[in-house]
Length: 158
Image (tube, rainbow, N blue to C red; front, side, top):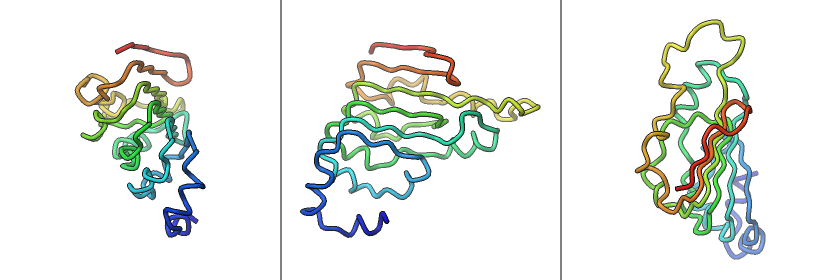
């Protein structure tokens, strides 16, 4: 279906997508979205990317650590709100700091309750970008973290 949509001319797509202000995308689709898709959503100001598991095994955390934000986000001139749910993204790309974001919400997934041992790679539980302010958007005014669906851990006005 996406290939069919991608083949439609821009003049036809603009009336279809030009007024959409919010997208919600499953992470499974992110790898299939071409960068130029962002040019079709000129009014988009909010995007939500969500993972599929509330609780994850070490293997699922490992898979998340290889997740990369879709590059179409960098082509959204009005993007002010980005929500990441249940995605253990380890690093933001270099272009992330240039996004016009004002708000970033992140809800981390929990380690699976039925997991009987310690994670061999504890770094999977701590995203590298959390302590690196230089990788964050310069226009960011609010950043909120939520852990395992139990409430906000840290809300910081920047």
